[in-house]
Amino acid sequence: NCHFDIINQIYLKNMQDLFSLKGCVAIVTGAGRGNGFGIAKGLHKFGAEIYSIDLQHIHNVEEDGFHQIVGDVTDEKLQAEICEKAYAQCERTPILVNNAGISMHALFEDCEMTIGSFNDPEKRQAREAHMMIKRWGTPEDLVGAAVFLSSDASTYVTGQDINVDGGWTANGLM
Image 1 (cartoon, one colour):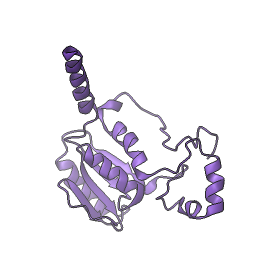
Image 2 (cartoon, helix red, strand yellow):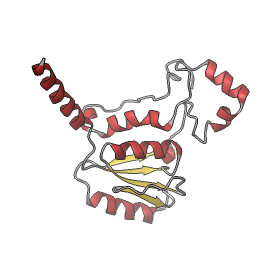
Image 3 (cartoon, one colour):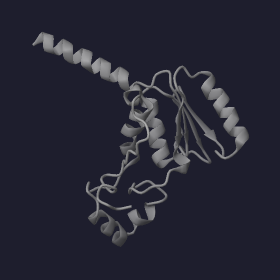
Image 4 (spheres, rainbow, N blue to C red):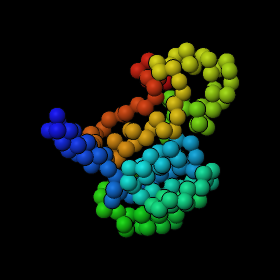
C-alpha cells in the first residue's frame, strides 16, 4: 500500500510539472472581462506571468505577475512595448492568447457575441435544446484547453482545432 502511495505521488508530481507554466510569459488580449479574463486568471494560476491587455479592465487584479494594461491591441507601438517588456523575462516559449480576435461558435454566458441569446428567454431555450451538455459555457471552461496548449503537455500537438463548445460543433451546429 505504501509503495502504491509513493507511485501516485511521483505520478502526480510529474503531471503537475507537465502542466506547469512557471517561467512562461503570456500576453492575453481582450482580457479585461469575460472569456479573456478567465483564460488569463487560469494561466496565472498555473504559474504564467500575465500581460492582460484590453480597452478597459472590469476586475482589478492585484497579484504578483498579473499586469493589466489598458490599450488597443492594434496599436503597433503598444504591441512593441508589451512584447519587449514581457519577453525580456521569458524563460520558455512565449504564450499569446489572441482572445480579442476569437469568433465564438459556442454559447458562453459571459460573452458579448452570445449574451443576446442568453438574455432572451425564447432564443435561450431554442439554443439550449441543441446543446449536448445542457448548460452554457463559462470563462472557466476555457482554462483547461488554454493551459494544455500553453504547457509542455501539448508539445507534440500541432495544427489541431480544439473545440471547447460543450458539444455544439459535434452536434453539427455552427
